[in-house]
Length: 308
Length: 256
Image (cartoon, rainbow over all chains, first blue to last red; front, side, top):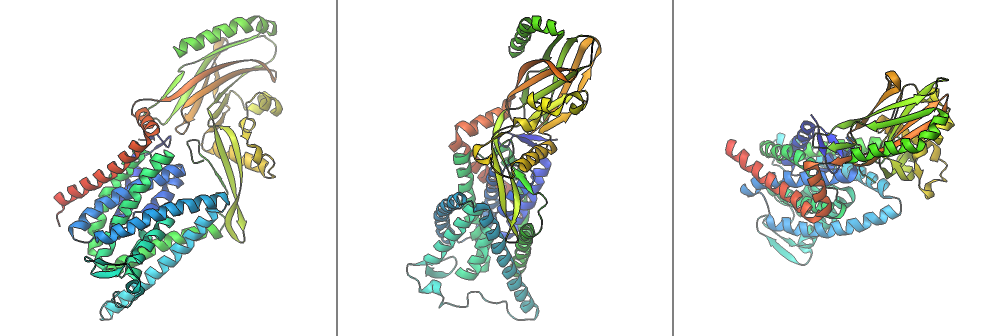
């Protein structure tokens, strides 16, 4: 059976799309990432025009994160104030990123920049996540207490001005670091077309020193806000949102996200970070292979429906 | 309505060309079985069927070639190249217009029907249909990239060349079938029927068909085009409601 997509102007298998949504939604629930960095390239591999794939990926990320953020709120796993501060930065960052992207495009350097940036960022992130979490696991096995990320109160985040209380996180820090992180994530997500959860999680752990039980919920909230904004902008500005494709992906995605939250609850923080690191590293290796080895398709061309 | 109109055109053409054709003793008339292809939610492509009759003299061999051409759209192709050891660069050419679909049906391979230059001249080769943008025309790689573009669209069944697509029936009747894939976009399509006599074009006739979205597909497409802001809000709302209800369902059946 095939279903025709009115905006992408092609037919796809609805079962395949729902399954894809289920798998990516599950990852989204486990790690608190939107899954855009997996879904968007996968859709493009299937021949869906790039702008449609970006919009559909964002729409799925919004649905999956909505589905899992409910559970996170109930378990009091979200620092609402922190999430909102980061999201404000994120929206500013998306604006800066869009301008930067059109400048890179005018220089003819957009694609190369994006691909190299992706490889370096994901590669270093994946390596450090895996390295740090494996060390933590080994330490716990050896009988020691798990390392405490909130060791230092003399951190630069405490020395900067504009201090704000984040009661849920039990932090009194300057508003500048979370805002700056939000802007950085926003720039990256505008350039790379992803939600940015996979960057935000390590930033919350290592820079903000947030309690581990609040990290996933807070980043899910931020992904929900960014992905919703991207979905809306893609439709209003580019007309590239395909509601039929979104519905298919979302049906699988929201169920997957629920399973993901359940699975995530059974895993420890270190294990979660090791798994996310391994996943990010795999994507980075795949991208690096594309840069170094002769690509399977030397030619790429626009599809009749769009992708111009 | 369109059917009747195109029938009139065929008749009218017959009247105008009739005398001249009689002098050449070759006459062709053709009509589409369906002159509208409806794109519904289960659309996976369509078969375009052309029926017709040809009256020709007794000397030499008569061949029928049918070409269906989809609406033109801008297009580009790029070739990746290695820069400083990494595959990051690319050479690109742009087409101001390229047919989104180009299907040719015949009873024998085209090369056996007419010489290559004749085929190009009469627009039976996809390569000749591509309108290269001015800025790209001087590219030294243009030739390679154009060939690759045609080859890729042939792999995607957007450009087809079917040497068994025309069936010659008794009494000068013929039938041509051309398969269009699901990715052929809506728009106005042209079908051209050409008669070749001894490798030379003798007669031709044109007709059109419309590929159009209907029902839910059309409603969604028009909603997205005419109310982009509302459409975007609908997408966000869809995500939020689906997320909320999934959370609700799971909590009910798998508490904790």
